[in-house]
Image (cartoon, rainbow, N blue to C red; front, side, top):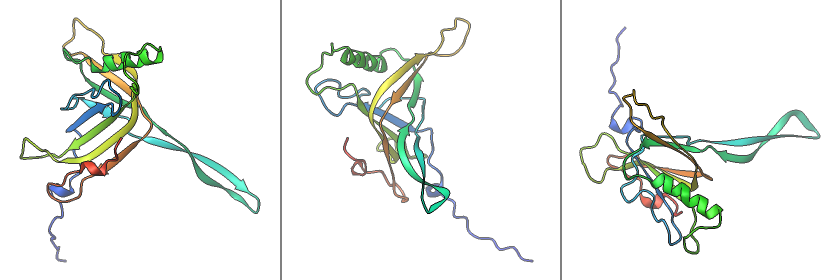
Length: 197
């Protein structure tokens, strides 16, 4: 029996998207207060988790067709987003955002009309490997709507340890959309593919 050797279809274009090269940008699209939590360069988070949702199933039965229950979709709930990063000197954005939320809830907010503690969060997964240090193509763009910090935690302080301080933030949101780049060399996700917040 003779074995047939075929050309492999594997290439960089068929590799899965790498999950370790990404940027996070959190901003407030309206109001006169905080325009960008992250600044223009994005936040350097170590991990982003919780991008999932679950839709309830509503079973029902009707007369004449009641041997098995029929199912229809109910409410959809989006899991909180968890982000963590090293606590660096001068990076108090998450804490400041949390304080802003409390001033709004207590009725002592100092922002102008239309200011809101809820923001929009963009997660951009970048191309890898790349040969350019500028204009790195975005392979996946995720936009989360009406995000706000529901929890902030800091790692333990240990005088005998050799670690660093980690800041973790949990964000509630009301849904997300995703856009993928085309499967062509150097393809990028255009900004028009993501709806305006």
